[in-house]
Length: 159
Image (cartoon, rainbow, N blue to C red; front, side, top):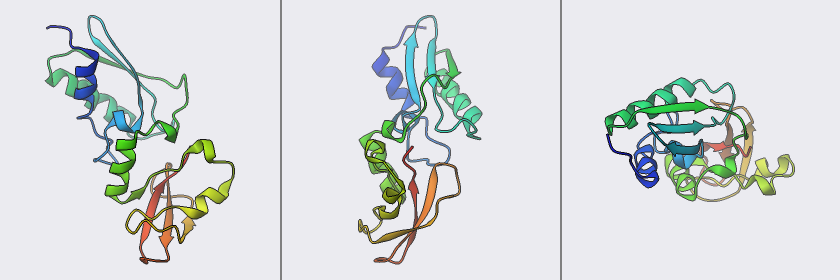
């Protein structure tokens, strides 16, 4: 078993999708925080929330994907540094919008709850929207309504 390059490992990790948003890789979600290669590939992962119910699923999917490519892998779940929605890549934000989820605004601009009142609709790109429920189907999403296209949608919360 030869050592893969770091670039190759990240390419393989692009195959591992978020179980709740299957168009978004864990790399683009920003939860893969470090990769080292020695006798095996070691992956550090920081989930979006401590109580994320998909942690074990994601960990196993990473290991299975690397095994499929002939690499032994170990995944360390840690919270040394908290995950932030700013870690979602630009490619990931585009994927979220295509999936029908409004990407989160830049959390560096997030100073109060007003930012949640003006989410951009992923369907019509208008901001004539209103927060209907700050508690979506998962901890990381809120539910909005677009007054222009008359559609409900979810926004990935800025964290």
